[in-house]
Image (cartoon, rainbow, N blue to C red; front, side):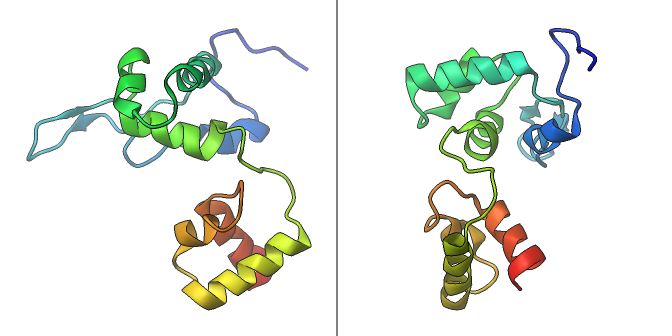
Length: 139
């Protein structure tokens, strides 16, 4: 096993989901507002560690405050990174039969498009996970 330099970005397949970049992570200006957006860069381990500490100190409600203390990241980037990757309440392991059954019931109730709503009924799961579980294993 080779070691990466201390300040490197994640690069293993295991880390791939955790380094997802979002459409809002681009470099450029919005034509109408002229607001500058930060570059589309992967999160470093140092940024993740700092974000975790900032959420411990400030909670997970005021992302503008957190972003102001984390260089080169927007409030939306910080919020998404926390909610979709770093939150320790997220379940990233295998699905249980009970979770599968619940997804089936919720899709019958809400349809196969309202994944954020469905995820709210499954502790520790996010909409993307529910959608992928449905399309890849349950449908």
